[in-house]
View 1 (cartoon, helix red, strand yellow):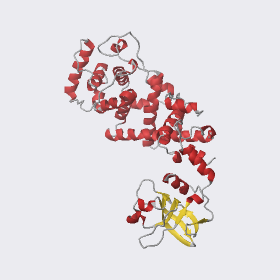
View 2 (tube, one colour; view 1 turned 180 degrees about the horizontal axis):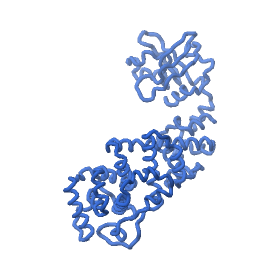
View 3 (cartoon, helix red, strand yellow; view 1 turned 60 degrees about the vertical axis):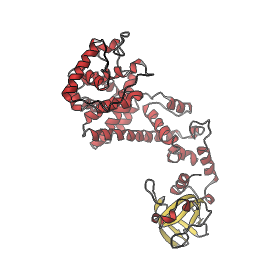
View 4 (cartoon, one colour; view 1 turned 120 degrees about the horizontal axis):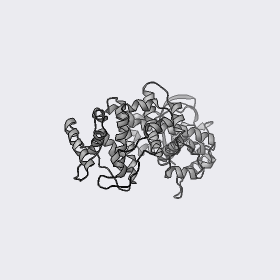
Length: 426
């Protein structure tokens, strides 16, 4: 038993609220449960309305597992609890008094909760070591219609979460959307292993400097490789030394500082994902697209974006993965699967935030775009598919990642539509 569950029972009236009586056998009529106080200190519910033994009461409600928790939490010394009009508990083990020595009326919930609800609660929260998530054995019972609606809401939640970073970058960039796109693309070109390092690299470059280098691919590569610390060694390779000399010129000209740039990682990466390759591709993207943000905003189909991001490395990297060693010649283009990740993690979120910033409602267009992308392949998605959860596109996979990270891992079943569905046997 948890206080969260008791708050849930009270908030949604998940108990027999007809013929209620306090623990002192007073008639209790529940008119309004009050507003749930989630973020602030003080009683759990504000502005409840009750009738106790014919007397109208308006005030706050506090919820505890046991009545004695009132004293365990030192509420008797906190003025914020002076106007509590009802103490809602699972088990009444002691009388609780106000400062004027009057008894606070108490409702013992365990007398009014259906047994079926308690069975559902135990199934949901008593997770065994063999279970991946608390409801994995019950998921087949969930209505397909309810699950579909919940996936849409979960995906919007995930977009809102990604919006937080975009809004921060926008503030830090003095509302320069082109600069924000560059930083977000950089982060996601680095993927999971080098994402933070690539973002720190982008943050170290004033976007006006990037603008002045976009006419020359070598300047862009020198800028990126130099700021990343990849041009510091002594290597007998003409292209390396060309970039090194170019970077020294740019560093002096623009007073570049790479102090906050995090080190890049090559370990356990497949060669196509080496940071050298990704930085060259990023440089090529900006060499070919001066007004990239405008192109992103004005592109609306998957094919538009596949065309926009159809880029490859510069000539040197066609037969290299590092500066030191030559490799078999191959075109190193952005793959469709990589572009899909850019769409999911960069393009769609920034289009979502931008549309909202100019007063548009982008949800319909966003859902249409994300629903045409294939779902991601990772352990979370594989496990949900094993549990027969329908995952047909990237909207579904993003939704289930949000569900696992934000609800399942946090044991927030009471806030989850699936948890509520199973708990109430709907």
